[in-house]
Structure formats: C-alpha cells, structure tokens
Image (cartoon, rainbow, N blue to C red; front, side):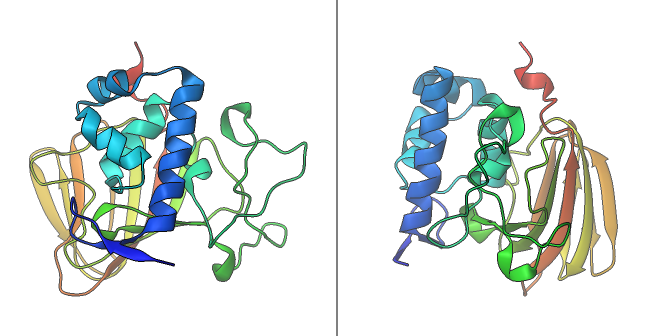
Length: 226
C-alpha cells in the first residue's frame, strides 16, 4: 500500500485507507443531508479540515472521528477496514441504525481470531483493532496501539462525548487526562471515567502504548441532542 507523509499530523498514513475512510464519511454526510460547513460548525472545527478528511488528504484524530460519527449517526463499525476489502454479511444482516453492515469480520461463532480483526488507523498513528466480529451499536470494544507521541487529542483540545470509558493498559506508559487531573498508567493499570468529562489519552513513554478500551453509550452525546 502506498504511503505518504501527512502534513497535519507528521506521520505516515496509507493513501488508500485515508481515501476509503474519507469517502465513507462524505457519503454518510451527504446521505444525512448535512452540509460540509454545517458539520464543521457543529463540531467546532474548520470546513477545510472536514474537506481534507473527506478527500483522503488527512486522517482524523480520535476526538474528531468520534465527533463526526456521533453527529452523522454512523457506527464506528462502518469505518473499520481490513486490507483491500472487508467481507460482506448476508443480505438480511444489518449493522447499527438499521443500515447494512459491510464490515462483518469472519469469525467462528463467538470467537474472533486475531488475524481477522477489522482495523482503523487515525491521526498521529493511533491504531485501532475492533475486538467484536459484528457491530455492537451499544459499545465500542477496541485494542488500541498508540505509537510514541500518539494522542487522542491535542493537549489543549480535550475530547468530550457521550457514554462511559473503561481502559486497561497492556504495555507502555499511558497519560490519561480527565477534567483537571492527569494520571500515569503502566502495564496492568486500568481507568474508568464519564466520557462527558473532557479527556485525553496519550503515549508518554518511549515505546508503543497498547491498551484495551471499552466505550459504552457513546451515541448519547449531550452536545448533539438538539
């Protein structure tokens, strides 16, 4: 897969993936009848950033992806990919919100093998692997890898969304800011917090930080209920 240096975040991202993600976000925005400038205004970001994401010129941060997905009522399931194509479900299978899910991972009943996880790469090189074979509209269950310097949001722009977060650090050093407090977590440490409180997750070590995150009730975002 071709790679390029992303000017916005200073990391290598795959052109094919960035384009695929942008196309899906743009298609959903148009389907929802939301203008580009309206979406940018609602999320408090520039229209230029939304345009760059939709055209595959920039990868969204974790915070921006959560905000876009919530505003457009799109399941994170629809944004994951594996290789060049993802397997399709049967004609009667649906994902969250009653829309067909194109991102069904091959599984053995309740068992999802590591090689079959659906994957997603975001700004600053943050890498997600979905730990469920099918979409669960009520929670996100993800294995997260933060490279050195990787972060969910800039230090001065903490993220906020609906639901509750549960995290378990498997490797490395995790800096977790929740409200006015910041903690350092290392292997075996866990954290739980209300995601409506401004927060940020970052790798503060000199090796990749690997963790498992569960977000319950993300769609209940108080900012977007009007």
